[in-house]
Length: 289
Image (cartoon, rainbow, N blue to C red; front, side, top):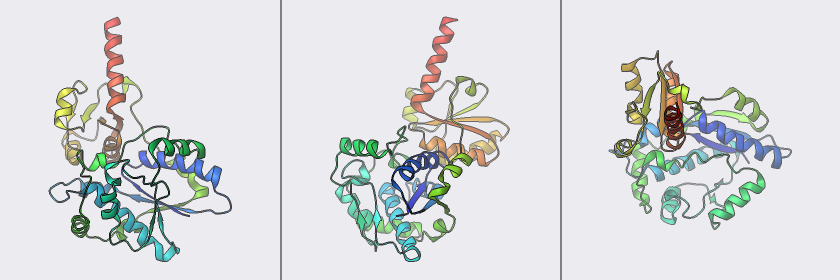
């Protein structure tokens, strides 16, 4: 068995994924040095977050994942797609949306966890050592904050056609590593998160959340910027600054921080809960002083 991973916030989610895979490989893989395909999903995010073109992004994204696995099949002799989907765990995993997602896929989709509830899955993940150290959030939180639970297959067909339906270019640019290379690859790929309040001093702070969330609470001095406008924002403000980016779960902020980093600026990321804790700690210390 080989593994396909589509990174939405490389290298943050890639590192978290490979940490899990390393445990899986170390404990349960014997005699087979399989391949891990890591696809850069940043272009997918840019396209699918355009809600004027895509209304069912969370399901269309899953269809494209299946399509990538399907395209890898001929050269590797795969007989099916195995996923960790469980019925109803998130909006993209309702019966209707699973049906819409796999419509037109030429490989069978096997879902060994489909009938398990969350507690059973967590217990199994702890047993085999793949339970994550933290919850980075669901990809549907990137694409939509109010995803539909009953998407029509034809609607996904149209969105896939709008996207182009061809995932070959994504696979051509995919990183391919062997199970035996996981540890080395993980060490080479790291990203910096906000761990100390001092990191925010003198930095440009960007809040990627929705306007109403920003208005309810935000880090003092933070600017509310849409994730799609981050690069333009940095161009206007310069790459000679440090940018601190946060969002609800840390996924969008990690994605944005990577884009900023690739522009030549220093960027750190955080989630709402962590950065709020740092701000509260600073407020308490100021009151004590």
